[in-house]
Amino acid sequence: MNTDFFYELLLCLASGFTQAVLLCLSIYMFRHHRIYLFQRIFAAVLVMHSFGFFNNFVMLACQNLPNYEYINTLLILYDYMTVGGYMMFAVSLVFPNRYNIRQLLLLEIPFIIATLFFTFSDNPIVYSVVQIYTLVASSVLLVCLLISIKKYTKMLENNVGNMEYFDLRWGSILIVTLFGVQLLWAFESFSQQTWFSVSSADKNLLFDTCYCFLSLIFVVIFTVKIIRQQVFILTSEENNPEENNAIENQNPTEENLLTDASYTSPYHEILLNMNIENIISEKQYYMESDLTLQKLARYLGTNRQYLSNYINQEKHKTFYEYINDFRLEKAKKFLEINNSNHSYSIEEIATLSGFNSYTTFLRSFKKKYGQSPSDYLKKEMK
Image (cartoon, rainbow, N blue to C red; front, top):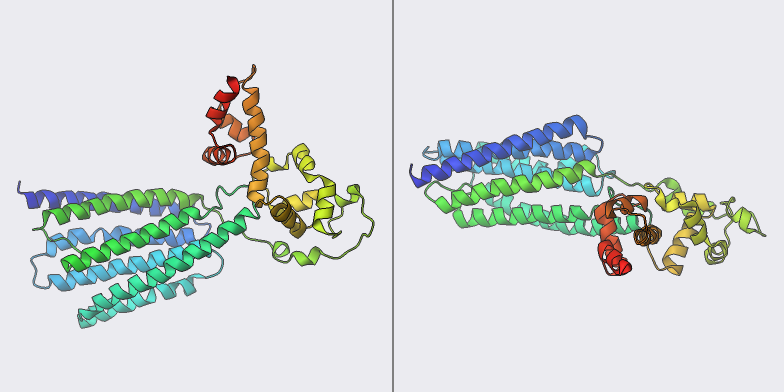
């Protein structure tokens, strides 16, 4: 068996396996996870991406044909259409309720037009134009999406007590990864004057094989994230807190502060007098996995904006940090109980303290106390 045939066989096996897995993932998402538009778009893009790996079989079969370059470029343009699909997905993920499918398709139209133009004209300049356009468009999109994710994360931290399935910071990693793949692909295209690694270049065939497996690993990881991802939307009341700012009670007592949400004296006077930390601890509102700023304000009978100002300006924390501090204090008590006759695992303590995620608990505990829960427990037991 010659070396070229071995690498060609390896590439075919990797391409076939990757294609099969991507198709299975897309079918699974279409059947079970299509609540949000970004999930449906991602499932469709997986189908497009999977057929892109079929190109390897086509090019191996056609590499000795006289119109090889035409077929090669046409298949490359199909792959760029897949890049357009990923752009649609990225925008729908970061802006889940801002654009409909027709608006998102505007990102795909340039690639469709370029493919059709090349199909009937066989003009080689189309390939270079598409490459340049994709690099420029994806660079601009990268910056816009990263800025938007940062703003979205800040909004979440100020409104939700559990970010586990709302957090979109992993999306930054996804977008940067997709951009990195695009740069790597462009570099290989310019250096080889072709996307497909010709059979005489064994190392390049091995590079394409590694690309298949790396693509598979990244897609599986991000598919799990996309399946779990949920969207947090501010209600009209949360977007317009001024609607609750009419003064209806000029002589409030602590009792009606807890029941009358319409009263609006300066937030620091109201909430400091209410001693809301004791109320939250006693009622254990922080144990609710879906606790939001609006919901807590309603429980306390106060205005959402006043509660937000109190947490941000008096406590110098985000709402997420504020609620997590209650959970961490409870977790610390459980760890101290472990020093007596009771025994809880760290995972059990995380759940009993109101954390949805064990990893979030570990990260939050170490950030606040400078050590892991297990190290804290060992220190307490000395």
